[in-house]
Length: 493
Length: 100
Image (tube, rainbow over all chains, first blue to last red; front, side):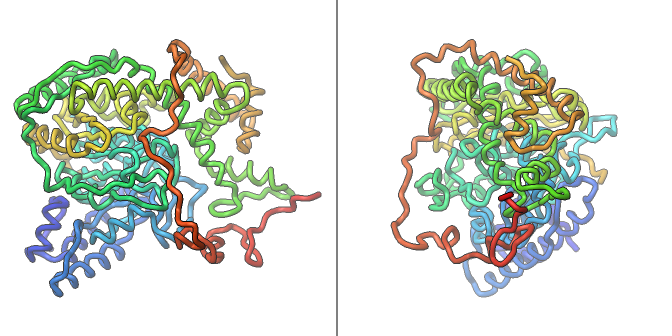
């Protein structure tokens, strides 16, 4: 059997369409790679039959000369936050273990309609709450990467860590992710792949397990900017079932890709030069500037004065929304029920939620409940929402003088699993560069820039104006072409 | 501002999460660490700033005023709705006795 697992989305799509190989061959190849990679723990369930059925449908269409779709013949991993009809959907929680939705999320349906197939449901931080993939009820996800000369299990980032691990390990050519405060970009940066969070509202949230609804956005994770553009086209689009869905046409991002940045201004936010940032990260940022200058762009300084307040504001707003969203897990309608002997309804709720939620989820539900409670609402929640306005205004002002912003994705490279568990706050700080764009609803992407002296990948982040995914993708492409990032994890699994 | 053990117990009860003594002991300093850290938001002068309501300007649409405008979210799907219920009975959600 030929190995197709080094191919990306575009190569598979074009190869299948051109008759170089069949979609079935590709699906079989990836199914085998997934089955052989159990040690990564990237998947909660695998669905080889789904991948094969989609591949056969694509091959049959080709035989009849029909259009194969934007993702025709491409098998992908689906983050286990998307409801998939008849296939267990858990959000990596115990409380949803065994839950098999009777419906399909809009984003996953769009991908199947575009000809993609599903390799399985990818592991994640529980309810997407985490930055290291250590809060899943189904165990940690391992990054395929190792620090040079060590054998310690490394974090693939989070919350889309199953997605980043699978794509970096080449057991999936691409995967869906969701980003609430960096959950696509940070894992992409940790594993040397690309990932884009589009403008809030581009991708429907219908059928995506809700964490913080004003922030949650789905997006693609893949190994190239082109692959991200293709997959985002398939995922995005207006959906009447999501009240916050943007009523806009989906641009043809793939066709309009161009790394010629002549006439473009790239903003460098001075507030992102933070204490505690690795020197290698600062170096990669400098290299990024040089690459974009080489692509024709002008580099300008910009200021985002409220940057340091974005993260604490996020840790009020996101838990507040989560505490409300997660009220639905009550042991009545779906999921786990724990009914102690002789318990009444209220006791059943409390026992079910105690057994069904992990520690990080409980922590956030409690914080959220507290900041929304009478007497504290204005001091915490209203103040955080005002700061969110200020953060968004900072970007608005910056974009008056630049077209796209370049910054690091994370303050450090990946870390060993278990090394940041002592204090939840240290973990939160990992998203310091990712959260501001989330609070402002802006399109933002991470592209691999280089490996550090430990052999671990580092990512660069591009943040664009609302609806300007094209500007983000184009600047990302300029970096991709110049960085020539071709490092791969050595196979140990 | 910091929270006491009793306050955390009260919040947990409001959030309907049963918590034992050991868990409460663990949770109190963790929550206080987070609350101490978010305290810095008080430094920012927000007078005259409107709290954010919608991150991307977007007006709320009204759906067509017809029955079953969106089939997936409309009626007539009792079996689907009950399919994952831990204790569906006679076409309803079953719960423990509510009225004493």
